[in-house]
Each structure stands twice: as C-alpha cells, then as structure tokens.
Length: 419
Image 1 (tube, helix red, strand yellow):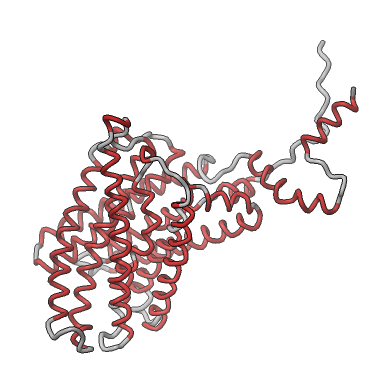
Image 2 (spheres, rainbow, N blue to C red):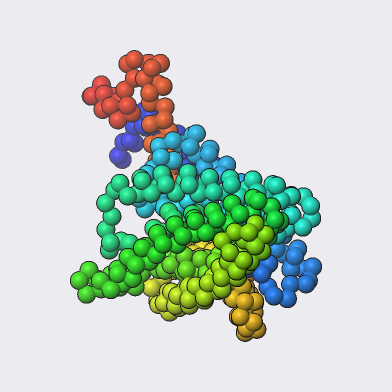
C-alpha cells in the first residue's frame, strides 16, 4: 500500500469569494450601467411621452444606474487599496486600459438622468447642473489625456484593432451631448450659457474627428482580409463593431441639439450676427442628417454578420453590452431630426428602437446576472489573488523579519532538510 504523501509545510490559505470578486473586478463593469442609462435616455425622448408608467420606469432605471455606478467605483477603490498590482495592471495593460474612460461616460448618463428627473421636481437646480457639467469636463480631460499617453506609448498591431480602442476619446466626444442637455435648464440670457455652448462645440469637434481616425483604421482593417486574414470581427470583437456607430450618431444628436440652443443663445447676447443662431441650427441639421446616415450604415454593417461571428460564451457577456449604449446616439438623433424635418416616420422608428433597446437590456441583464452567479465574470482565480497579496505584503514582512525568504525558497530549503 503506497505511503501517504507528506502534507505541505506551507499550505495555501483559503481565499474568500469576496476577495476573488474584488480582485476580479474591472473597468469593463461600467458598460452595464451605461446600457442601463441608455434605456432611460431613449425612453425620455419618445415623442408621445405622457404616461406616468413610463416616467416611473425611467426613474427606476436611473436609480439602478446610480447604484451600479457607486458599486463599480467602490469596488475598484477597494481593489486599488487591497490589490494595487492588479489595479495597476488594469490601467497600464493596452487591452484593458481602454475601458477606464467608461467611468466618465457612465457619469454622463447620470447627469442626463438628473436633468430629466431631479430638476423638474426641484431636487436639483440649474446651479447644481452647471457644476456637474464642469466636473464632467474636468473628468473627461483628466482621464482621456493620460490614458491616451499610456496607450500611444506602446506598439499596437492593426490586425488586433477593434473600434473599442476609440473609447479613449469618448469622454471628450460626449461633452457636446452633455452640454446640449445642460442648456435645457440654463436660461439663454444667462452668460454661462455661452460658455457651455462654446465648450460643447469645442470638445465635440475634438472627440468626433479623433474617433473618426479610429473608424478609418477599422475600415482599413476590414479591407486587409487578403494579406492579413482579418475581415469581419469575430468572437468577442464582433461586439465592438457597434462602438463605431457611437461617434457619428452622438455627434449628429449633439450638433442638432446645440443648434437648437444656439438659436436663442446667440441673439440673446448679440454674438456673431442676428442670423447666426439660425445658420448654426440649419448647418447642424444638415451635418446631423449626414452623420446619422453614416451611423446607420455602420450599424447595419455590424449587425448583418454579428450572429455568425459572435462566440456564444457566457464568459464574454460583458462585451455584448456594446449593443446598447453606442447605439443611443443615432437612435436619439431620430427624434431630433424628426422634429427638425417634420418626419413622423422618424418618431415611429424611434419608438420601435426604444422597444428593442428595452428588450436587449432585459436579455443582457439576465445573462450577466447568470454569468456573475456562476463565477464566469468578475471572479479571479485564488492563486492570482494570493500572488498579489504576497506582492503587496512582501516588503512589509521583509522589514519585520530580515531573514524572510519567499515561499518557493522556503520550500526548497525544507526539502533539503527533510532529506
């Protein structure tokens, strides 16, 4: 009968589920909240929005979004404190750092929700929204530029390119969208409205044209099928095809809405010329219509091969949230273009897409909850947790015990002593 193996002198300590959750959390959790925000943003723009049920439903989604935002921020802060090495990896790794700016985008959806549901009830005033706007602009600049420096400082392979790399510029691109919403609650005669309008156009231009370069690279990659064997995006990358819809769609919505606000702001302050507001609005409608068409093309271009290219793995469910928030831009543009051009069919299409967005959110939320319960997402391996715990405390132990040796050195020494 074989003799039993001697027990390990240094058995691995057990790792709690909470520790594995905190260590396994990532910035990719923010799209869940952004997808939730996408629902109430689109529902709030419905042409015939007169039912109390819809308002209550949107408010419920708004509070869910706030809860998810607080949960994500809190967990990532705990990760930075308990496992600084893992937190550093998430920020410096090229494939994972692109999701860091999504925190700012999630905050943008909270600002829009606050304007829609807290301002009408008097819980938040225009001054509070004005402060939130500048907080958002500050976050967009402070997050996007450092992440761009980190990202551009490393080489990248075009064969691995996905439109998700454009996330680095999304916070600045959405400044125009946020500005157009903030101007709804700021009096046009208020001098602050001029600053918001100018800053909205300024950052919208930066964000849109920079993200357009990413879209050009995306189209270039699709055309490299013959020499590099790339073609349509596959697997988890198939979801990122919808990210390309975001820049033209959000910019279409922003330039039309900013033009609407310019009609009253510019004449109120006697800026440019008496007709400047009308010219800006007309130009915004023309540009918005063209960008809307481009966004719809990219959406169709992504949806046709989507089901055949996607890997149906529950562990990749987080990437599927790209079906929601990037498409908010062009769907919302349906409403504002319908108002500008008096096209009732746009209102019908907007209502249909709003219904599909709600259904998509429900399916994704259930599947995400199932993947979370099964430990297929946000659940680190025990050895990874222990490794980062050792690295975090090794210097402290070395200071306390000058004869401290790493675990593998101790095991080697013990093996020789046993012989």
